[in-house]
Each structure stands twice: as structure tokens, then as C-alpha cells.
Amino acid sequence: MSEGLEQVRAGRNGALSELHRRYAAWFRARLIRRYGVQDAEDLFQETWLRVAPYQAEQDIRHPKALLLRIASNLAADHYANRNRRIRHAHEAGRLDGWGFEMPAQTDEVLAKQLVLSLPVPLRDVFVLSRFGGLTNSQIGEQLGISPKTVEWRMTKALAHCAAQLRR
Image (cartoon, rainbow, N blue to C red; front, side):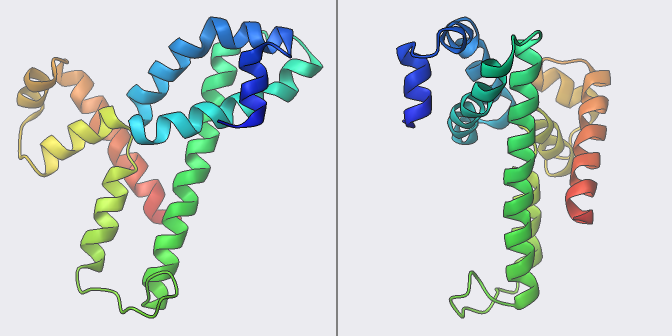
């Protein structure tokens, strides 16, 4: 665990420690639900480190909104950097400078990375629709959400994919 987050937990910064005590469990659950378990812990720790300067300067009026915005920006940076590395390797015809030729399935690998970059709720709908061939009603029944929510999530998933491909 990083030293800065350890200081927050240890209470060396009173206001920030109180903020962490009040919102840490809620925030961790939101990150897991939105980004999956793999990315959530890194985003969690990095976000708290980024919140510290805000707390030192002034009271945070909307702490939940600030935490989510910082995490969202960090996640966007992470995915953009990963996609840039993949695209660069693809354009160079090599993998990470090791001299290996890219496999013939490069497009499949890039598509898989694109789908994996989707937030979990959007990814579930996208996969069931595009790869499972289910209708919005069937997806809604399977996930316990309304067909309108399925439609909304699918629209968001497609917009996310289009934005990633434009980069």
C-alpha cells in the first residue's frame, strides 16, 4: 500500500482521514461495480492520493462527486494509454519491441481489448447482444433490468467503442 494512503488511514491528516472513513466502503463498491475488481483497487488508491491536495486547500463540498470524477479521469487515462500502446504495437507490426510479428488475429485481439475496456454493466449488455445474439428483452430478463435500460447501456457501449476507435 502506498505511503500516502497509509497516512490517510492512520489519521495523520484529520479531515482527509474523516473523508476516507465516511466514503471508502461506498467508493470501493462503486469502483468494483463500474470497473471490475482488477482495476478497482488501483483506482481506489490512486484516487485517494489525488484527493489529498484538494482536502488540504479547502473543504470538499461534494466529496462523492469529486471521488468519482477523479477515478473516472484516472480510468480514462489508463484505458487511453493501454489502447495507444496496443495501436502502436499493431502499427509497428511488433509486440512491445520484442521483435515478434503480430498474429493474423490482430483485429480480434484489438476487438477483445476494446470490449474489455467497457465498464462491466455496459460490457455485459454488449456481449449478450453482439456475441450472444439475444434481444433487448431477453438481455433484460437475464440481467434483471428493463429493456429500455438495456437499450441505454447498449447505446453507451457503442459510443464508448466508437470513441476508443477514433483515438
